[in-house]
Amino acid sequence: MKNLIVAISVLGLSLTSISAQDIHQNEVPSVILNNFQKSFPKAADIDWEIKGNLYEVEFETGLLGDDHKVLYSRDGKLVRHEEEISKNNLPKSVVTSINKSFSGYRIDDAKKITEGRKVIYNVELKNLSQEWKVVFDAQGRILQKRED
Image 1 (cartoon, rainbow, N blue to C red):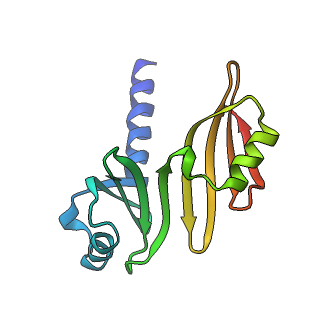
Image 2 (image 1 turned 45 degrees about the vertical axis):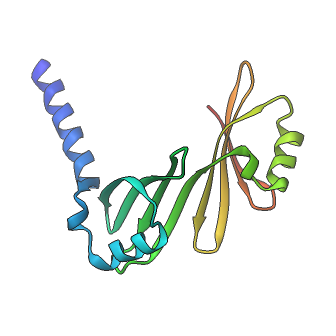
Image 3 (image 1 turned 135 degrees about the vertical axis):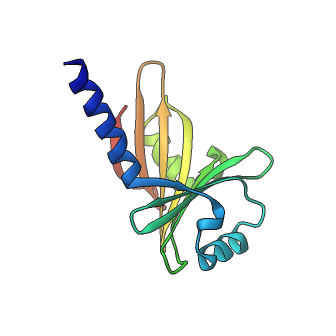
């Protein structure tokens, strides 16, 4: 039984490494690296991975080290940008929706996610006894919510 558990654990770790593989920056195609450096010249603490057909880079910017995650296609096009933002940078429409639908909750974490021309906001809301993860569009409409 112990051997079975070890075998399953090893298999699980192997499958995880197949789906996402850490790589060194010098293994990133130059077209992707050039586009990244042009778009984010002040990026720090940079980590690269390959996820399927996409290159993912996680990094920080700014004095407070705001987290970013960006996905690039193999031809160097930015596919998705996820960035940590302060609650003060949420659109007024999102804040209004939060105040209306989640009165008594505080904003714990907020991310702006851009894919092409589509922008959504992923917000964690908490009160004393509950936590919600809610996705809003730029107009403040709730696209998805789940209790955490």
